Image (cartoon, rainbow, N blue to C red; front, side):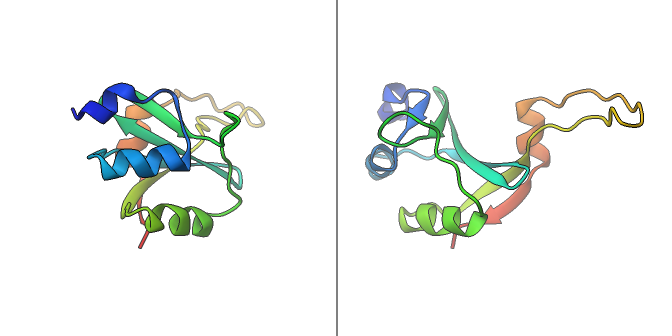
Length: 114
């Protein structure tokens, strides 16, 4: 674990992310799709941080192209596209078991930022 991992909280701005990356931060990048809206999470040794604006609001995107351009410019090369958990269909009575965050990362779609 790098020293930078210890200083990160549950929210991370682009400026903080850029600084962390230049100081050895190497997260697993998750892009979560929530029915056409996307948010970005960084999984690291000290936990998980959401990409947020300077006011502390979680940043949302309307497409993966904007995420690709933003994160690619910072030097990140790839991530994992996951989907908000939809484990059943109450309309037809199909029950399901929610998958864990680790399973979402494991079975997500690998994506490139370059």
